[in-house]
Image 1 (cartoon, rainbow, N blue to C red):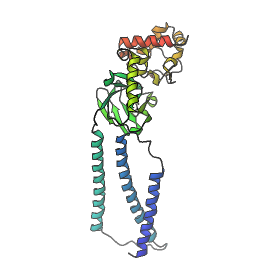
Image 2 (cartoon, rainbow, N blue to C red):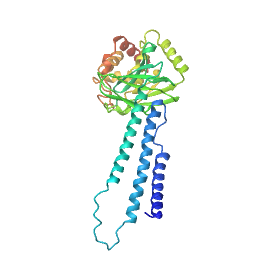
Image 3 (tube, rainbow, N blue to C red):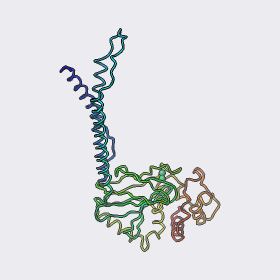
Image 4 (cartoon, rainbow, N blue to C red):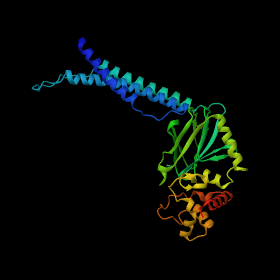
Amino acid sequence: MRRGNILALVGIGMVAGGLAAAVALLLPWFPDVASKERERIDFVFWFTIWICVVIFALVAAVLTYSVWRFRAAPDDDSDGPPIHGHTGLEIVWTLIPTALVTSIGIVSAIVLSQNAALGKNVLHVNVTAQQFAWSFSYPEAKNLTSGTLRLPIHRSVLLTLHAKDVIHSFWVPEFGQKQDTVPGITTTLHITPNRLGTYPVICTELCGLGHALMRSRAEVMPAQQFLSWAKGQQKQLGGPAGSSGKAVFTANGCDSCHTFTPAGANKKIGPDLDNLRQEAQRAGQPLEQFIRKSIVDPNAYVEPGFTKGLMPTSFSSLPKAQLDALVSYLAGGAKK
Ligand code: CUA
């Protein structure tokens, strides 16, 4: 091969590789990174991407060069020379991909095992998914329950996930991992948050009418702030967690679908609970009886303008004390 040809090949390869690298580097492909596990996963991603960029440059160079250099003249109708393979070349293009794919496999295996390894002083959080809300409880803080996932920064967190009704899937893009929640099966997910901030918790398994709206927040806070939040919440609830109506309201994710001013809830997926009085009138029932019935048997009366079946029926299993507290909390807070 002449020197000029080699220069042309290298030139085309550099242009193709440069374009591919620019696409990889200049476009914002990823959300922010907020966990150690995500950092490692991203490392595997970039490891793979750079291999692909190099291979792409190589193939694009040879292909472009061949199309241009060996094109047939307009009046050339003759056949090409009969070629029966090239053992040397075939060995090379088998060995190189084998080595590359194997190296990606090894890097992935290392990352998987590092991501699964729990740190010291693990914080356990129980995650409960139900149509269409998330709730998070902290066994170390007397099962303190919250509709928002609050986590201290730089601490190993082990999520234990449950589903009450159908399959859901837990995903915080900034943490970089997904985990299904399956009725009857306990799944786990290990996260080490390393960036302060508030990130979305998203359900990524089609789970019913409200699937797209099944969202919450993950808040990564300084360790000290996390401890004082947990203490403050326990005090505010007074006694066993979950006995106050407001606690039941947020713990069961009512605020992820409804508006209810006393609880600071402002969602519009379900009926506005500030107007419970008018709704009870329309249903022709006394207020408290209407509220109780609507929680345990939501399809008995459906407010005009809302879809039957949107409100989950799983709340019929609420313990009686919690149900009573919730009913009187809602009745007390409804507008006159
Ligand atoms: Cu829960 Cu989709």
